Length: 444
Image (cartoon, rainbow, N blue to C red; front, side, top):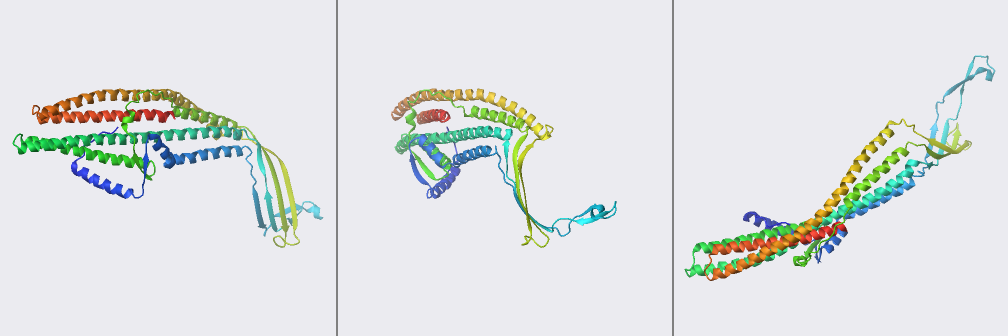
């Protein structure tokens, strides 16, 4: 969770002015939306966030890839060609002279063929048995699972980012109330010391210290408001700036939620498992692509021949057709295919190591989430005890100050200690909500 930071007063005023103008302009295009809990914010982001919308398109692409793999089992294709040729200078053939009554050893020049030829050809064909294409179906199914899992992982990351911003805003709102209460106390101290100074009871230095304390608190409040606006703009970006969200949830809702939550997220390890399975299938495909492919082939042709012109009325039409089977096989001397097999084997070993490590890393990450949540609970308990002690000290010091037993500087120190302890308690409470919801997001 973010804490109050010091910003020079001139820069602070400039930033506030710029953000006021920016927020004023953006408010005309943003719809105000009231949300009561983090799940409502997450649901809204699922409807509007561009990355989550793209995830749906990625799933559709993976599904299309699977359908394509199924269609490629037969790989149907119907090449069709049409051509018209003008053989204005045809090839001359030399035939044996005796055929034409010429002496033995002589040849006669003969020009054969038609000058105008037009041919139409359709050649339907499909694969009957292609083991590599059949194996592609399982690969496409694994790819579909991998895309779905990756989308869930991306969605989880976006939700965790929203979770952080959401509890920053709840923390800032609670800190703002604390500062406003302390400013009221500081204003009363300024008034008390000013009256005492006017009556000649106290020194000017005490008035100065009281005023300096008030200015410091007002500056912290200004910085907090500035940070709050920045976080609100960050949150709005998850909804493409369509909404200006008004959060109604209070941090106090998490004060008594100290039950531990078990974590069971496995998206990351599952991602590596699917990558490993995909590479196993790719290696199998690389082996199967070495096998022959049996295909059905056919050809249906229509040819028009003429020595007068294209498609002459007295021209001849000649048809010639065939159907049959064809075996296509690259002998295992294809360097590229052999290299692919060995390449896949190396990548498979790498992914096996990644998958094994991811399993252990996933167990550690789940345990770490539980520990962080438990740590936030314990920290809140301790900070609350400190706050109660600092509050008791300040109240007693304030009474002693009014009785003129305690000097002002001691009172201001105890007020600052009380402020810090209360802000620490608020931040710890925000961490409880953040850590718990992070577990819920990861589990879901």
